[in-house]
Structure formats: C-alpha cells, structure tokens
Length: 116
Length: 115
Image 1 (cartoon, rainbow over the protein chains, first blue to last red):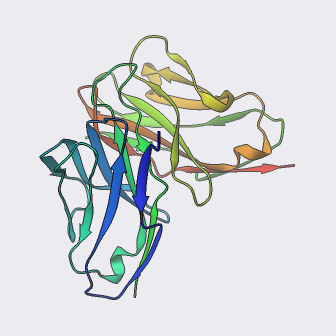
Image 2 (cartoon, chains in turn red, blue):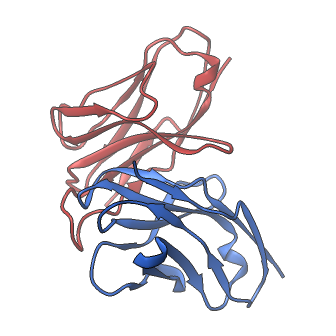
C-alpha cells in the first residue's frame, strides 16, 4: 500500500498564481483532511471531507478550495497565491468509524510551498 | 469548545532516561484522544489512540499513554528514551460525539535527547 501520496513535494509560486496540491490515498478511507503547518502555530485544518461529494470548511479555509469526486482523491486548490500561504501542507485520511479501526489519521509526507 | 494544551514547548532528556509528555484537553464527553510524532522534515505518524476501555494505552515504538478523566489528561510516557525519539510530539482530540471528522491539535512538544 502506498498510503497517502502528496504531490508535489516542493513548489514555488509567484503571488497571484494558482495551483493544485494533489492528494491520493489507497486505503479506502472515508475521511480526508488538509492541514497547514506553520512554526509556532501547530496544525490548522483547512478543509475536510467525510466522503465522496461531501466537503466542509475547517479553521482556515479562505483562499483555498477543495472537491472530492472520488473516495481516493482530495485535491487542494490555491485560487490566487499570497505570501501568507507560504507553509507546509499535509493531507491526511482515516476510516470514519469510531472504534478500533477508526480514528487514526494517516498523513502524507507534505508539500512545502513558498509564495514569493 | 474542545481544546488541547501541551504545557511544555520543549523538553530535553538524556538517553536512557524516562519521559513524560503532558497533554490536557477540554471536552465534555468521553474524548477520542491521539498522540502523533513528527520527525524533522517528515509527516506525522500515529503513536497511539484512546476511545474507550482500558485507560492505559500501548502504542508503537515503546510508548504508552494514560487517560485520566478526573485530570482531563492524556500524558505520553516512555520508560527509556532512545536518541531516535528526538522529534516533535502532538496531542489531539476528536471534535465531538466520539467523532474524528476533525481533530483539535495541541501546539506540540519538541523533544531533544542528549547522548
């Protein structure tokens, strides 16, 4: 199993450019989430999904869009990049049920994004 | 609203010494609790989780954690630390009703290990 695959690993954007961070999981997980990680601020939830066709906003959704057309894929779109979006982005997935199988999120290795 | 506090920003221990990382949460019902570890430049890895039952939970890499409802704590322990345990450790709680749709995260504790 590949787990959670994020691409690209590194990206430099100019202010105003758009791009899509890709996330795919092969574990048939219902739940998927996008986080950003900044020094001293821990992990902040951007958007999450509880299944194909269902998405919702997290703590810091502004400037980002998501969609979930399949169980496997959960891309994150930056509409018009700003320097404040310079961060490390993590995608994560989990089974949705409470219990021994559920709860523990599997994380991708991250995308380090710099906006200049 | 749920919240998670990790009181120690940075901890240094000697190799072979015991370790306890503190985590306090604010939650009304029985929480869904997690500990994750992040090595430099890496993603996060689940160490252990608690959702019900035995309050002492065993995890990977020799870690354990104890859920104490009366103290709203879920502290992480390891009897003998190895140099490879140097990393950032995060505590998290599920968002509600035993659900893990969203996790509330602590700000992390950075662990350094002296040889």
